Structure formats: C-alpha cells, structure tokens
Image (cartoon, rainbow, N blue to C red; front, top):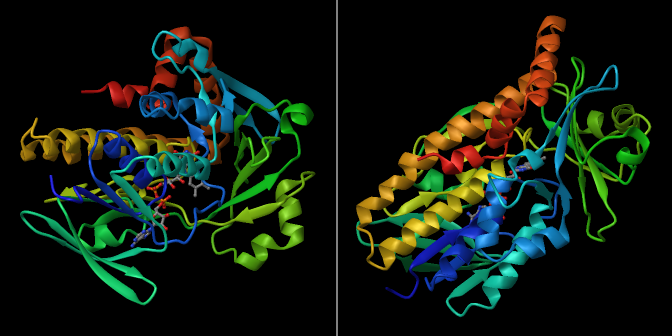
Length: 392
Ligand SMILES: Cc1cc2nc3c(=O)[nH]c(=O)nc-3n(C[C@H](O)[C@H](O)[C@H](O)COP(=O)(O)OP(=O)(O)OC[C@H]3O[C@@H](n4cnc5c(N)ncnc54)[C@H](O)[C@@H]3O)c2cc1C
C-alpha cells in the first residue's frame, strides 16, 4: 500500500464519511476540502433507516441521535384545506431494521462528527482550504494538483474519490457528462422557531400539496437543541433574489410565521453518465443531484461512500481483484436512477399537481396506501431506501 492509498476531493458529508469508512479499516486517506470551514447552510437533515444502519456500523449512530431529532412518522397534507391526508409510520418497519425511524440531523453536524473521528485516526488527514484543481488518472496511480492560497502541490495516490459536490471538478476533469435538467424555479428554505407541531398539529416531516405553492416542513434540532423548523417553498420561475427575499414576499410565503434566515439553491435532476473512470470514482452530489423532496440525495451519497469504501478496502488489501471496482458504477448508478431520481420527481409532481382530478387521485393513493399494512410497509421500504440497499 503506498502512502496515500485514497485521495478524496471534497470534505462535505460524502467525502468525510467515505474517508471514515476507509480509515477505520486501516487505509491511508487524505481529504482535501476547498472551503475554510464546514458549510452550515440549511441543506440535508433527514437521515433514513438504511443510512442509519450504515452510520451505526461506523460508530456514529449515538452521536447522530443525540445531535438530532427522532421522527417516526411523516405526513402528507392538503395545504389549501389544511387537511391531513395521510400519515406514514416507520414503526411498521420494526422487523425490517433496527432503526424504524428517521433522524433529523443537520448535515454539517454529521460532517463535524466524521471529522472529529478522523482526527483520532493516524492514517487519516483532513485539510481545509485546499482545492483540487487538476486530475490525471493514470493506469497505475492518480495524480492531483492541489491549491492552498498561492501555493500549488502535486500529490499521488492509488485511487481518487470525487466527492466535490454538484459542480465537481473531478467529474469535469474526467470528461464525464452530467445529464439531466435544471428546474426553472429555485427552492427557498426559510427557518423559523415557530412551533408548527403545537400550533398546527404538524409532524416533524410534513409535505404540503398545493396547486399554487407546495411546501415541505421539517423540524431540526438546531445548534442549541431547542428546535427550529425549516419550510421549503418553490420560487416562481424568473423570480429574482430581491423579489424572493423582500419582507413582503417572505411574509406572504410564511404567512403567520417568523423567518430567521433563508437560502436559495438551484434545483437539478442530473446523473453522471458513469460513476467511475479508471482509478477515479464519483460519489454523492458529484455523481447525482435531485430535488430535495423525500430527503434522498445525501442519503444516497452516503450509501455510495460506504459501498465504494468497502470495495476499495477489499481491493487494496488484495482480497478482491481491481476489476471488482467496476461493480461500483454497475450498481450505484441504476440504484440512483430507480430509487432517487424516480422518487424525487414523483414526489415533486405529487405536491405541485394542479389538475383537481390528479390531486384527488394522489390523495386517494396516499390514503389507500397508509390504510393497508402491506402497502404501507412496501411504501416505507422504498422511501427509506431500505429496498435499494437490500437489492442485489
Ligand atoms: C434545501 C436542500 C435540502 C436538502 N435536504 C436533503 C435531505 O433532507 N436529505 C438528503 O438526503 N439530502 C438532502 N439534500 C441534498 C444534500 O444536501 C446533498 O445531497 C449533500 O450535500 C451532498 O453531499 P456531498 O458531500 O456529495 O456534496 P457537498 O455537500 O456539496 O460537499 C462537497 C464539498 O466539496 C467541496 N469542494 C468542491 N469543489 C472542490 C474542489 N475542487 N476541491 C476540494 N473541495 C471541493 C465543497 O466545498 C464541499 O464542502 C438537500 C439539499 C438542499 C439544497
């Protein structure tokens, strides 16, 4: 094994988890993170049962639960009539998993936890403010160029993981297409301490269907553990930042609620044409992006990280031949298309449907599914990604 067995571009949640999964098995890992600090903007929070199982294997589950909120159920509402349409309860998965619930834990807390663990492992190193600018993936090694301020440095490793997010430098350097589309509307995330559970009877994960303006509502623990609610709305296509963030518009969107802060990401549905090329691999948002309805993007990214790490460990230890690494693209790409792209597109359509008949059909489907124990379980096995990790 050479000094740096695996180089990782990007120290977000996927890069940090990949590093931990490798380093715990004794593999020498270097993580290069372009930013000077962890991004604390409101992004992923929902950690599904399939991912909880993996985080438990990495020894992170207790800390994740302690820093987050456990949510057993999620709800679908009709926003115009303020009617609860259906509630799904992960308790029906009690025989399928040791974690029949989701944990709402902000993604920056997971990154911090992983970095903390990495700092205790002598074979792992995580560098902030270090950008990967160039990649050369040769037959026997990968070579990358790093930039730290004015300084540049070349580094060689056996393998490279591109976990450098949706705009991935690694993906571009490998010449891998990122096929799909970008929605005309952006998604606005507003954060408020207003207690929707007490005031409105909402669960910690609530999806609101509305022909005019759908919404998603989530409770997270917040940094002080006292709880914050995030409300996600679509903006209008073409709406400018000024129009979205002026007080009248924020108040209109939040109605009676009290905004604290907002962020404003573009939303895409895209999958890389392949997840690997030679000795370089793509994981997380570098490989696939999707709308956040269903909370699946990061979960699937963590699954990429854990599966890839497990393959790399076997190959680096000589237990498997290097051609087994082809299994990563062969397995993870179709899983993302089937379980993440399809579900998140369907979730968005369900919430934004305008035709009254289509809305009535959606509601009937949700009610029917929630009322039938077999269908209820099958629905949750899919939404929790347990079906995807048990497949093949
Ligand atoms: C509003 C919103 C809500 C969401 N909710 C959920 C949810 O509930 N559940 C869920 O599963 N997903 C959710 N997601 C998706 C989730 O946030 C992403 O899937 C997740 O951040 C992907 O992690 P990542 O590590 O692959 O990429 P990122 O988090 O983007 O991290 C990539 C890292 O790489 C660094 N980097 C970039 N370029 C370089 C370079 N050249 N060199 C070195 N470092 C580099 C970046 O600074 C960054 O730290 C949500 C997203 C949004 C926007």
